[in-house]
Amino acid sequence: MICFRSVSKRYPVKGGSNLVLDSIDLVINRGEKVGIIGRNGAGKSTTIRLLSGAELPTSGEIDRLMSVSWPLAFGGAFQSALTGRDNLRLICRLYGQEINESLAFVQEFAELGRYFDEPVKTYSSGMRARLAFAISMVIEFDCFLIDEVVAVGDSRFHEKCHTELFEKRSDRCFIIVSHDTAYIKAHCDNVYVLKSGKLHRFEHPQQAIDFHNHGEYL
Amino acid sequence: MRLNPSLRSSLSIQKRVLHALLMREALTRYGRHNIGFLWLFIEPMLFTIGITIFWTVTKAIHGSELPIVPFAITGYSSVLLWRNMPARLMGAVPPNAGLMHHRNVRLIDIYVSRIILEAGGVTISFVFLTVLFVAIEWMTWPEDILGVVLGWLLLNWFGWSLAFLLGSLSERSEVVDKLWHPVTYFLFPVSGAAFIVDALPEVGRTIVLTLPMVHCTEIIREGFFGSVFEPHYSIPYVVAFCSVLSAAGLMNTAYVSRRIVLE
Image (cartoon, rainbow over all chains, first blue to last red; front, side, top):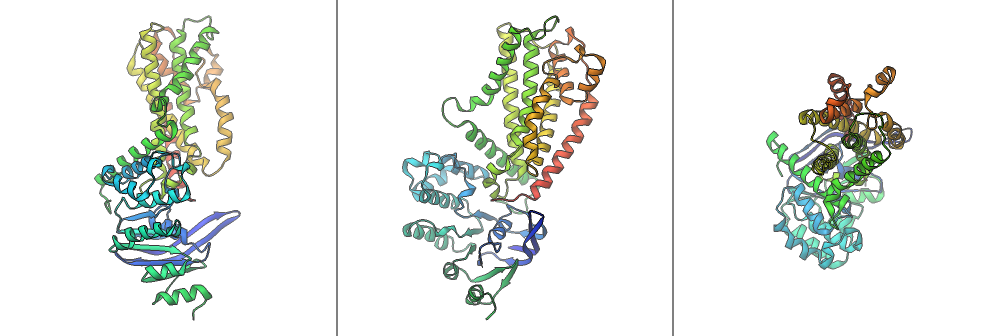
C-alpha cells in the first residue's frame, strides 16, 4: 500500500514558490491499476517522483508499504557514459540482484547485439528505450511507475513491453501517468485527474476522462 | 527489496549502494580503456612528482636543514587532499540526478562515494611515493609513522567536512563554485605546503595557524622529519574546527537533500 496524507509540494521559483501539489490524499493498494491524467505542468511527474521517493514532499506524509520502481523505461535513470552492460551491473548492484540471472533476458529483450558493450550515448533512441525497459524488468517490484514513455518505439516493441508488463506481471500494482486518455483507459481501473494542484477521484474511468477533456464535472 | 528496514538491512543497503556508486564513479571517471583505475592515484602522483622535482631543482627551501623530497611530498599531497575533495563535491548533483531516481541513492551516498574515491586516490599516491622514494634512497623512512597517520586522518576530516559544506552550498548558489577556484589559488601559498611555520615571524605564525590544514601539514611533517625542525600545531584546535565544520556540512547537506529537484 502507498498512502499520501495531505501531501503538498512546492518548488522554488524566482521571487517565491510554486505550489504544484496542494494537500493531496491518496491510497493505492497492492495490485491496483491506477491512472493519473492531467495537462502538461499539472504535476504528473512530480507525483511520480513523490511516489518513487526520489523527492520528498514539502509537507504531509507518505507511507510506502510496498516496493516501488523508478519511473519505468525512464532513460534518465541510466548513465550515458557507461555501456549497456555496465548500466545493468549498476542497477543490479544498487538493488542487490545477481547480474548473471538477468543478463540473458536483457540481451535478448533489448536486441542491442554488439552495442550492448558500447556506451549508451552512442545508441539510437529506440535502442535506449529497449535497454531502459529491459533493465526496468530485471528488478521485481510490487508496484511499477509508468511515466508516459512506454509510448516510444515501434509497435513490435510495444507488444513486447505489453507482454512483459501487463501479462507476465498482471498481479502487480501499476501507476500510469499520462495525458493519453486511451492508453489510461485500456489499462487502469481507477483514474484520477490532476488539476490546479488538486487530485480528483472518480467512480468510473470514463468520468475522469470526461472531466479531463472538458475541464469540468459533467 | 525489504520494507520498513531494520538497522541491519539498512546497513546492508547502504553498503550495496556505496559499492555500486564507487564502481560507477570510477568507471565514468577513468573508463575501462588503457590503464583505467590506475589513474586514480597516478594522476595525483604525477602532480606530486612534478612539484618535488621542481622544488628540488629550484632549491625552494635553500638555507635550511630540511630534506626537500619529504618536504615536497608531504606538502603537495596535503594540498591535493583538502583541495580536491571540495572540488569533487561541488556541482555533484546534476550529473548524478538520474541516479537519484533510485530511492536508495541519496545525496549523501553520492558525496561519500566521491570522497572515498578522492581520499583513496591521494592516499595511495602518498603512500606509494613515500615507499618509492625511500626505496631509491631519495629520503629516509618517516621517524614516526603514527604521527603521520594522525596528521593525515585529521587532514582527511578537514577535507571532507569542507567538501560537504561547500558541495551542498554550491547546490544553493553557483557563486560558491566560482569563488572556490580563486580562493584555493590564494590559499595554496598560506596552506603550509611550501613553508614550515617555524620559518615565519611570530605575527605570520599566528595568522597561518588559523588555518587547520597548516596544523595538519605540520603534524605530518613532524612524523616524517620532526627531529630537524620545530613543529607548531594544536590538535584540540583542529578537532574543534573540524567538529564545527563537519556539523555545518552535514546539516546543510541534509537541508539540500530534502529539497533536491530532479530533472
